[in-house]
Image 1: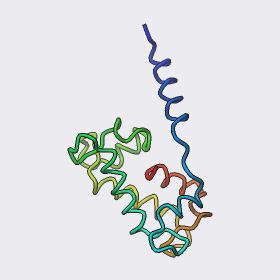
Image 2: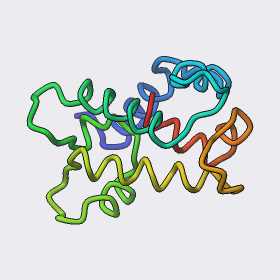
Image 3: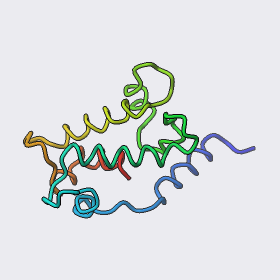
Image 4: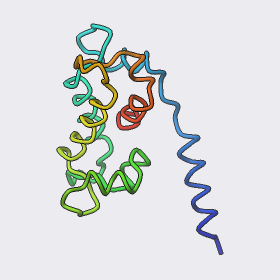
Length: 130
């Protein structure tokens, strides 16, 4: 019999050993479509929209906890799910992306540079884009 603890440990190891995410500077280069050295909300939402489509293999227009693959904790998913159906629509996902973008933008200039993306809030945003 496999214990819940063993399953939790295996899942944690799988998440932690997944593909490495590029450094914040590389993230800027990946998503910076206007090549200004920063990410604005439109660029971030464009990247998030493309990722949402990739994460939705059943094409039902929603992401459940399994499809989100650890990008949000259960508590964060519940908070981002206003209709409490256990899934996020694209609009709900983009609302979380925007909240995290704003949290990572303390100077409120509407753009994120590598330093802001390397902050705790910036890394939380990048988890939604990886």
